[in-house]
Amino acid sequence: MTTRPMPEPTPVSQPFWDALAEGRVLIQFSPSLGEYVFYPRTLAPRTLADDLEWREISGAGTLYTFTVADRPTAPPWSDAVPQLLAVVEWDEGPRFSTELVDADRAELRVGMRVEPVFDREPDSGMTLLRYRPAPTEGNPHE
Image (tube, rainbow, N blue to C red; front, side, top):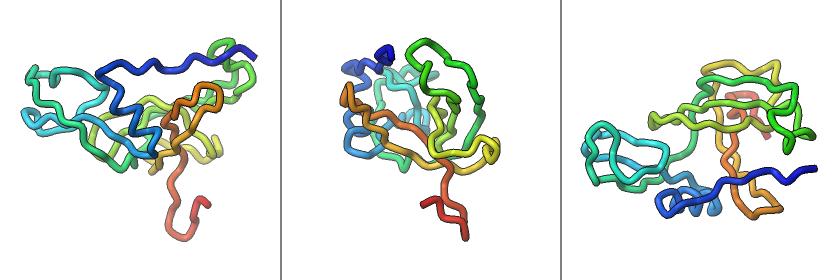
């Protein structure tokens, strides 16, 4: 198996990665916009204000879109098919590209509730943010 590439934290994104390692989701909030923003950056989008603050969010959201990759997306993922690639829209607004885990592809639907999974990669020690279907009333996930 080829080693899978891992994200490389930068000084700007380090708080996001540090929080994931602690099982928390931390993203930036811009008071000048009055909204959360993601990806990590130094200036607020649209206003270019230097007012970004790190705030913790629940990480819960809805499945905005997804695709099932039955063929490897690249050689490092040759043993990881199918891949359930997704975009999650956090309850706080921004969208996050991710992978779904603990999910039955036949039950996936746009708009379904999802919850964060803090997935520590053994080789690199990095924690990645993945998602799984959230429990529904009368049908707990675990």
